[in-house]
Length: 159
Image (cartoon, rainbow, N blue to C red; front, side, top):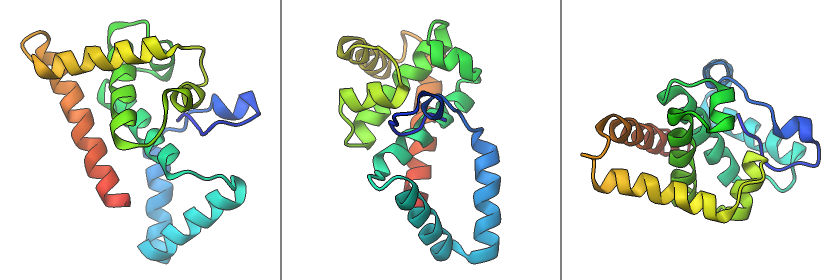
């Protein structure tokens, strides 16, 4: 799972399996209830990162959902070179721009890469083109729509 920007390169390149994280959160909820769990998680995040930003939490959800939805490995997602890797990342860029207040610069920091704004815009345009004309690639269209639906459902639950 990508993490918010940090000075330590090792911290920002770690991915956590979404299902493992979900199991840990479920244990917290079963022990403390949802309101107390929310307070615990928020307090912990604010203590570890005073500039805690809810947008980065949403971006993490978006990235993890993309990896699961497109059925790709973390390395394929990070490289974005294989077909599904590119579309998974492009879908993330698109959803991050629509679901958060993160700028292109923030997205570059979040993914901890030397990508340009032009590449991000191109990826977003590609996804928007596929969504506008699903006939171009129905399989990718279905994956992107499902990714979007899962992210929206998850965001509604946590907010």
